[in-house]
Image (cartoon, rainbow, N blue to C red; front, side, top):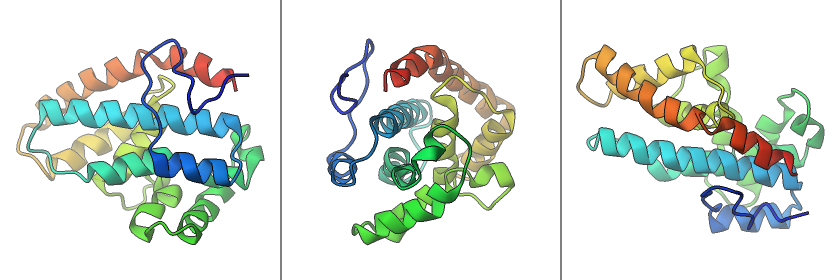
Length: 189
């Protein structure tokens, strides 16, 4: 079996940051989890890049979003059953794991908040972008989430809602278009 840390897939896939790789190796994370985190991180990287090109004045904590995408499901190393079935134990335990390994809580919180948007929780734009990357990597679209991202962006940039939504939709479509390819790559693990 190939190594999800190094396998470049059949498409251009960004690598996980060094801090993520070191932690995942240290905690002996399952290969499927590593593959998933790498895919979500890649989508977050592409999303942030696209948003920055279209809206260069959009203020967002790029590093926090990339951290959140790379580490959002780290708690599944403690709850591997949640790699194959629904569950939320990984969320709070993932946050605790990250803090215990020296990561700041302002970043570790993404392990707990990456799905909060589904429950109507109070979300920052950064929370929403991590949730978006975690949802769209496999080609899934969520009108509710995309609307929330649009609203979050409109608190930080000037623009007409319809125009921001239309441009965001084009970005989402491009990202979602490779969902089948990403799913096939993750299934190797």
